[in-house]
View 1: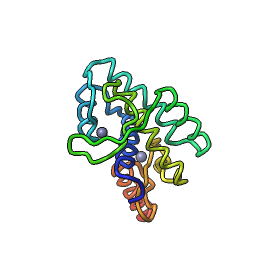
View 2: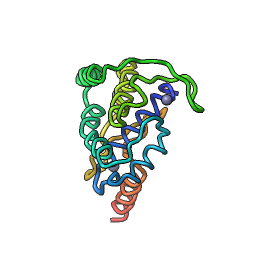
View 3: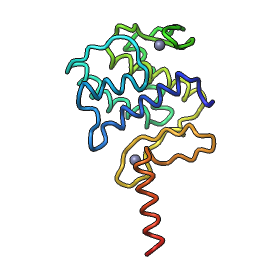
View 4: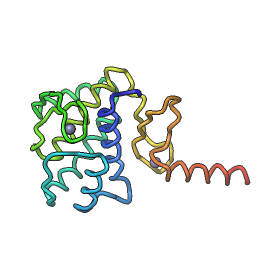
Length: 176
Ligand SMILES: [Zn+2]
Ligand SMILES: [Zn+2]
């Protein structure tokens, strides 16, 4: 495994959140946020109100900037985010999850927890000098963020939808 399990899950969650802002936006309702929360096995406080949804939606711009930054810029962003949140890393074990890191109180607002979790995950990426695992989708009209955790670094599209479209385009080009 390239990174610790909780790091990989946090990175996947951050990329999914950022990409939900691609047209059409797939994070527009409290139910959408419920599904996101369940999919990435978040725990802790949920308000299930419009303010929480708005805060998480607004976070996407900030996280995109971090995930697509240069290594030098990412350092500055991560240090800034962790400082603002007064992050205090603690090893915790709860529910069915083995020892992993929490750096903010589980009762902090969800957008803050996602921010800090992403920043903590980026610490590993930066220290391992693996920023190249993050990029932007190779599909012309897509700005989706790509997270490539594969051994052979083969992932260039943000999701199967984009890779399928590329395969169809390549097929058409061959037939022309
Ligand atoms: Zn936890
Ligand atoms: Zn894409």
